[in-house]
Length: 113
Image 1 (cartoon, rainbow, N blue to C red):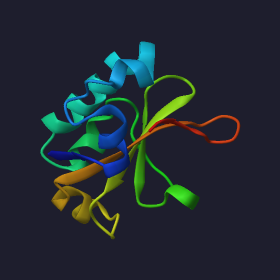
Image 2 (image 1 turned 60 degrees about the vertical axis):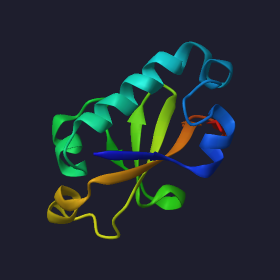
Image 3 (image 1 turned 135 degrees about the vertical axis):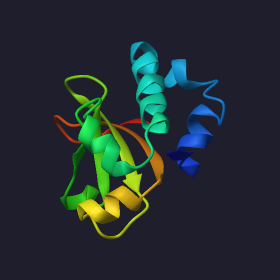
Image 4 (image 1 turned 90 degrees about the vertical axis):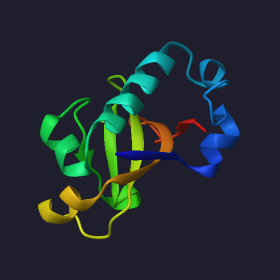
């Protein structure tokens, strides 16, 4: 699957992740691992089926996104490049945009970017 970093995320950590350790600290290894797991899948449907990082569709402010576990509190927010979330559309979705990492507890504040 093709993974694209959002413009804000590119500005924050750099396209080659050179500033990731400053932003994510101890979670930088998990962040990179989740990105590589997503890249290794053929499409979003496969990624949801395999369940690496407990990916789950979000609603509300994050409708159209996946939440993927980084830790018990932090989630990688992944925007799907499809407007339909049926199994057939997810199987055809082969591109995602990484938005960043959010603290799910408390005020839902962005950790990265």
